[in-house]
Image (cartoon, rainbow over all chains, first blue to last red; front, side, top):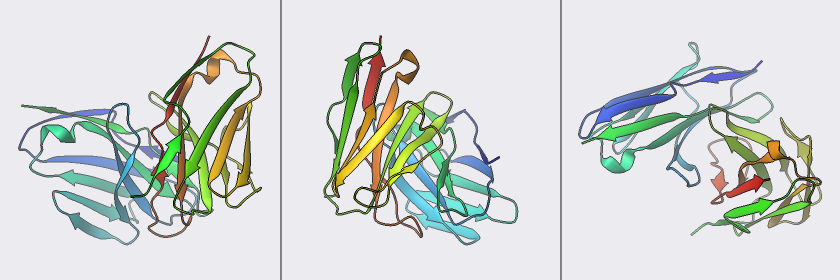
Length: 109
Length: 114
């Protein structure tokens, strides 16, 4: 079966750095997405990786290793508004998007 | 500004009632999706549509049907609502299934079936 694993919850301090990991086992791979979802709101796109390596976008970076079936989202200079759930999703060989259950990130002052 | 809208944020229905959830996108996207989101389970695909009048079952289609008569509108139908269909329902659309094309989500409809 297809599976995406993320930690259920993480806690970090305002101003610090946090890394949210995602491992996947899917039938094929055609890209990996990260989305942010604030409580009670819709998910919004953060990043996309299809090749190995690091993609940087402001305070957020996303890394991919296809051989390891592994990605992480790195958030720097954490702000209170970064408190949200972070969803990892992989496009499989049929171009279907497989979603992880999400990681709830709690930021403390 | 791209937009996906859903007909209501909250709905309360009784067991056995027929429920229509509407979704409209203004981006001329070919592909539209219905998901449900439950705590600890992530987003699960109910149905998707890649063109007008076309539909494909997702992972959990049982108890649901869909309709896509116009490109911008994708409706989810619960023929006979049951308590296990209490959930957050999210509609999304995207221009393509391949590549770095993100899905745009509506605000969600929280459905409670009593």
